Length: 324
Image (cartoon, rainbow, N blue to C red; front, side, top):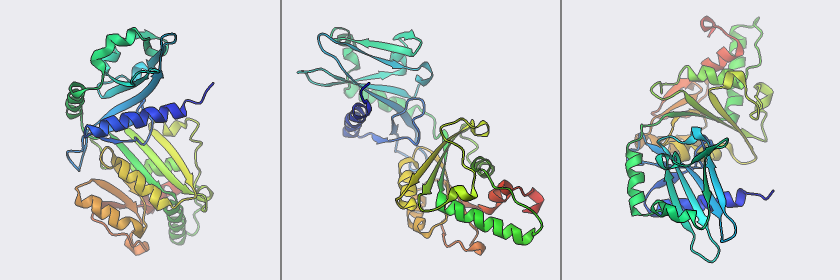
């Protein structure tokens, strides 16, 4: 079986180019959720933004060979759009746009909705060709969407490792006879979520942990296998990134990608974040910071709401509420 990755990347780049030319703000989502390869952002309000989920496909057909596209039924919601780039040898490539109501008219099989594509059948979809009318429909659909539905926790793994060590040392001095358990990532996340102020959002939680190859977060924290479903992480989509690059740059890049489309809880406490965070705060962005208290050595000062990370970590270590 051939590698489809280059074709998928080609489709995303072509579709992104079309959208940007028509003044849409386009970004990659944190996770490929419900088939979302791309997001179209409203971008009108800095503090909160509406978005549409985009799935991109590229198919090649000719006089002798057709193709097909299938979309799982669960993906097809009001904020879902399928962009289909049809490549025909010796002819111009054409971009087709299918909204949820269009896809629901396709045939159904065990894969979901399916569209068979041939030289003749594609002519029946001439009204779906990307045009000014389609652009207007996308804009209308975007305006009609609800505001931010998702909360993403971004974790600087180097800071979390230091914070766990510092918290354990702090409470060892306070409770010298107490033994502490090795915390799990899922327990720390669940404790952090108790401080989540975005109660208006749906219970859809993403968590991205950036880990340095030169540090040992796994030595102080039990990490789940992201390839397996963990019972107490059912409502949380987890992504672990291990890199040789500077963690702070990875965190800031992720933050820049999603600050308009997702509610954010940032677990970080390096002074390198101060100016970028203050720039976001000046734009009216809403974010919650989990960091160390100034008395514990924090030098990161912003106007964002913040919580002392030692409280959720203390609970994850096994302390009770009255012991923290």
